[in-house]
Length: 264
Image 1: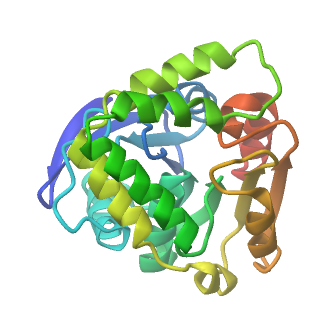
Image 2 (image 1 turned 30 degrees about the vertical axis):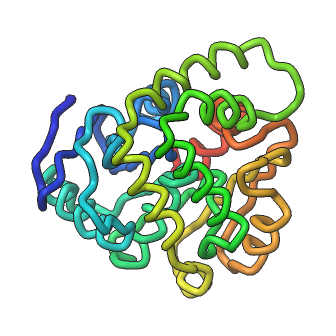
């Protein structure tokens, strides 16, 4: 079922399918819920899968000025209540979707069945990351979105050739072109101001799976591994042939591990 829900001054596009214990899928910056079409198709065979377009992306409305992930966590909770979700949920977040997931689990740990972070660091943005994001914002402000995407989208993938890479790049272009400028600017600001959630995860009592791409140029693997090893109840899946989009680049390995992790 696809719908747009007005909640707390947000217009959020929601795609729900399947029945059973809920799984919430949260996509990346420049992404959209339909990037998870194939993964949702597998998971929804035995679970209720909820996908949303994050603010400013896809069919959702723009985020308000001062948009922050911690604030949006409360909007997300209200959305799940609106959808009648009363059970604990498994949350799967990719990149920026992982930051939203981290904010949500920090605010509502009692509502979490398990957490999966795909290519999503658990710490606050460092100075280098902030500098790069601000450079993106400057290019967008100058009307150079197409140039920015031509550089950034191909760099999301591992250097090795893959027969589907051209299709993935085209899919990402289509998705990115549905992100509004306001959505991009305010998402960049929210990413720059995200918090450090390492201690939150260290003190958690739900299962955690951290998926890392060996060739991730957005967030290098070494830092993610170092933090992951500091989380007692975290399992780590290191993908040897992936960049920043392991659920596409090594689809079978990721899907099988996720099925096992959420007890399908």
